[in-house]
Length: 94
Image 1: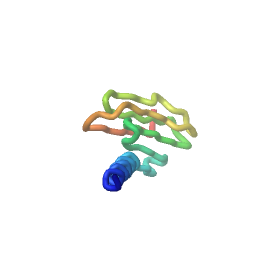
Image 2 (image 1 turned 90 degrees about the vertical axis):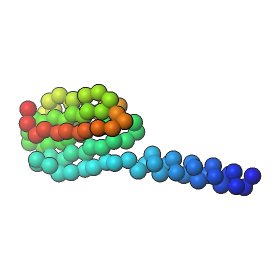
Image 3 (image 1 turned 45 degrees about the vertical axis):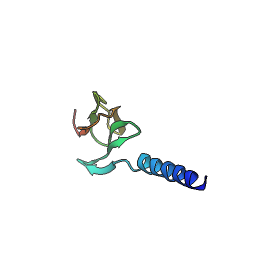
């Protein structure tokens, strides 16, 4: 019984680490802040620029775009993640 419980605990811990250890990035690019990555079953791209119209987009299971975001607001884009080839993009102009 102790061995089975230990195995279940180890498996549960492994699943938790795998769920938490997802690639995520935050970069200062083109005068703005770009948060992007893959996690919680989705690919996302969030871009903030204080001075310019801007936007973000992603390619996962499908393509999604934030459209144009006004200066001083976040451009938010997300899509369900694909098995491979997930991409995140930003743009610092409209």
